[in-house]
Image 1: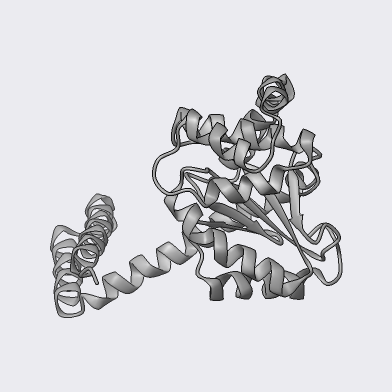
Image 2: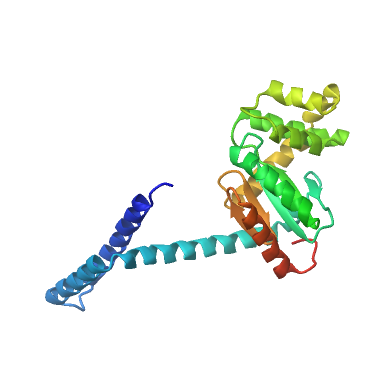
Length: 258
């Protein structure tokens, strides 16, 4: 396990910077004499030296406040774009299409963390039985990622999206166009039709729309999720997935758009 000392040191330094800003404000405030200002600065300095944990607590409180603000902003974006996020006809919905809670995943087929989350997510969706699993391709890592996303989306025309999706996440190592096509052939796709369907302008339009949605939500990479009405970034532990689904279900009741 990595030491947290560097992080704590940065937190303390940031807190010291904030404290210095406060003392500077005192210095600029002509309400206090120079002697009073020095006394205040000395009192703050001595207190912080004696109680450095206060700085850490302050930074943690700031982190929580910023996280809450970010989540509130994401919720507003989710509400405004609910139809595009949960019911876009260009997006494949796995699990139970009539489930009462949605998990929306923004993913990249070449993302290692997405692969790590692949089985836990599938297992949670399967065991729960009442989750709409909305799969949003967001190829951000490489041209091969983009190629794989187009192939998967085009596979819907042959009714084999999920087969190709699962097979691509089952691959080890880096993706290439050749590996994508080899995988598509192995799951039984008509390759001539697949290549033609991949050039449909609607696929590129949908990918650009996914990108715009992800950025509006403040996502910075894959995997990123919406579960119910909240947004989450990064790898999710199986226990977290279950917790967030339960939280969404408690908040939303039996609605199918949550």
